[in-house]
Amino acid sequence: MAFYKNFEDGDVVFDNATITSGIFQDGASSVDAFHSSSTQYTNTGDYNVDTFRYDPSNNASASVQFGVAYGHKDGSGSLGTKGATGDRTTAAIFGQFNNIINPAETTSFTFGSVSSEHFYAIVFNRARTRERMEAGGWELHLGSGSFGNGASAGHKIKLIDDSSTSKGTGNTRSALGTPEYNVVSGSIADGVKTAAADMTSNTGSYGAFYPKLGVILLNPLALGGGVAAPVGTVGSEVLGVPTITGSNADNRNALTMFKAIKSGSYFQAKREEDVTSRHYFVRAKASEFNSTSNDTYYETTAAGTKRIIPGLASDQKTYITQVGLYNEDSELLAVAKLSQPILKSKSREALIKVKLDF
Image 1: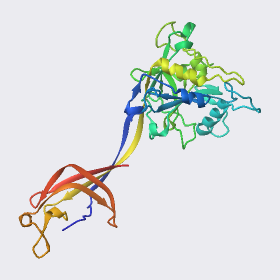
Image 2: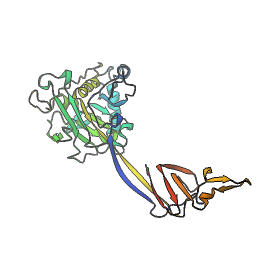
Image 3: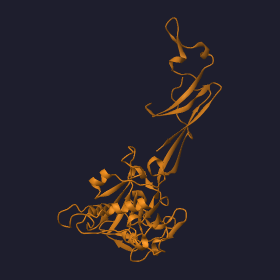
Image 4: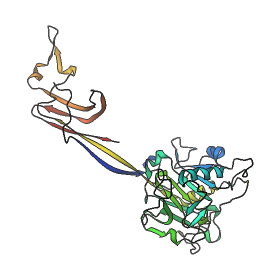
């Protein structure tokens, strides 16, 4: 009986596909509630605010969705002074992102046409982004919340990237982050509302987006001002985020951005993964695989020898329940289990497709 069979030409087919899925917990593509952890904030809140979909204080399954951080070139907004004592956490954060994103010897970030020495960062870890965040697949609402006053009171802005109108730029380190897109106002449904080039020259764009890194940088200058709009208009672009850049002061600007996200009450984002699939067409012809080594297929004679049960010897048949894939050394590499057995006999052939994704 044949236990192994080689694949023939045309039996193995390859294809490639891009798989898109929700980036948040439980596979959700959007969330409208945001929570923080008092334990995390107490211990490392001067660096970042971990953001959860579910409240970690009463839901054991709650996991971090993304982190919110604030970076400043000179360490403003955190304890410590340049060249002296103190953690200067915002300087450490600025340096980390600068080393990952910018070309060598760069000392600032460019948002539109404006150079900035500080930023807010929204960061997804690799486990959530897989290969990358989907360009054009995220939309973030920020609300003025408790800090809104005057023209910004009660306002929200909707932010997206400009991949629908731009191919992106390539000024980031090529191995990590290209392309880079501008963060602009608008929505996935309606497209770009205010392009980066249309923002005022003294603020620059709302930020930059790096799909492969899972990073959205937001520009404090634009979030503190932006394009004027009628007072009280929901969706206007005046937010008034109060970024505080005190010297040797623990201003916790990351918490301010977390509050803006919480007040905005909406974040949609998807991730992409390039998957290579290998399809194996397993063919069992009429004369093949009609017997088995399974003990239930045999009986022991009075003389103590083993033989096929007489009723099966003249009408051999088997039920295929799984397919094993082996290498040239007959080592088992993968097993495909069928949802239900397939009858195989001399009058029946079987064709089973096994798909492996990489």
